Length: 184
Image 1 (cartoon, rainbow, N blue to C red):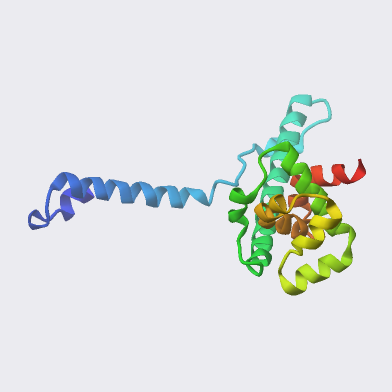
Image 2 (image 1 turned 90 degrees about the vertical axis):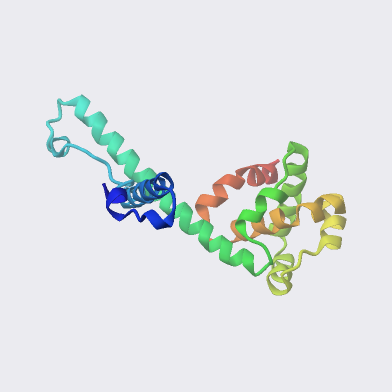
């Protein structure tokens, strides 16, 4: 109806105009509904139940689990934003890691070896924080990982060090293999 009322014959094709109006309406509607995305629809009866009502208990557990997941997701988003701000000081962003992350298991373990060496040596961490440069020669010599791997995955190594040495507990869970490598 809006397209019919607002259409101007001099401006062009009606079908193109109608398509544009419909697209804009759909975009507006989607944006409007996004604010309800995190809401969970639950009957209030669930929270006032008797102990015998096991089925309702299941619903309550599901609601609690969903709420905790939403909090975790929000926390993860905040951590990614924080890490991204830190990584900008090193000349790259969190999203650049997709290109420099190791794909093969062997390479990932080699990077883990370098990261563990850095985490165990506070002097290297201080130098990294001060100069914003990875001491490749020193790492190559002490971790016995080839220079080519260290240079190729420099961003990934720096990001892992920033995450593991900072207060990023949710993101650190994704780097669990590094801590496991350290135990072996």
